[in-house]
Every structure is written in C-alpha cells, then in structure tokens.
Amino acid sequence: MVLLGQRVLLRGVNNTPEALEALFRTMLRHRVKPYYLHQLDPAPGTARFRVEEADGLRLVEGLRGRLSGLAQPVYVRETPDGGGKVPVRVAG
Figure 1 (cartoon, rainbow, N blue to C red):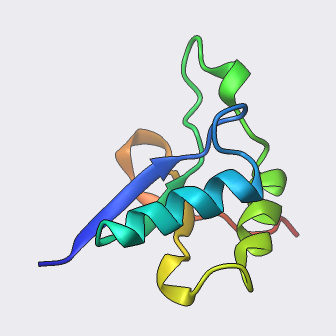
Figure 2: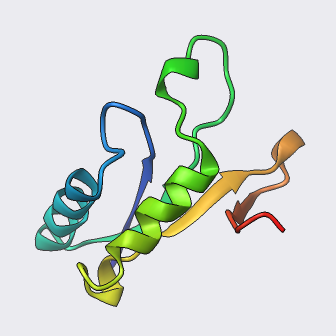
C-alpha cells in the first residue's frame, strides 16, 4: 500500500527549507510519500499564516538537491469554486 501525504505551507510553522526537509524526510521514514504541498486558501483568520506564492516556489525549488525526487511534493493551489488543484507556477 502506498500512502500519499498532503501538507499546507504555513508561515511560522513550516516555511523554511530546514522545516520542509525535516517534514518530508520524516514522512518518507514512515512510508508516506509527500504528494502535495498546498498554498494556503484565503479564508477569514488565516492571513497571518499565508506565504506568498513566489516565496513558496523558492522554498520548493530550494529542496531540489537536498531531497530525493521521491520526497519532492507538487506545490499546488486550489482553483476557485471547487475546480481542483493546479500546480503553482512562476508568473510571467
């Protein structure tokens, strides 16, 4: 059985390369594949935890070379109105 894990990127909780690396390594040790890293949805009372997408992209990119490919999650955001998850990309 394969377990896939999803986590939300939160300022002050897991928004450093060291915190994410430790989290994803721990997940793998427990046989959970880091599958999605979610951008925090805008909701009342959550603004203090929001990480800008550009900062999140830098964090995820910074994990390359620190973690195996198996430990690399897809950085996603939810689309409005329940349209599903889409990868966060560099604006341009």
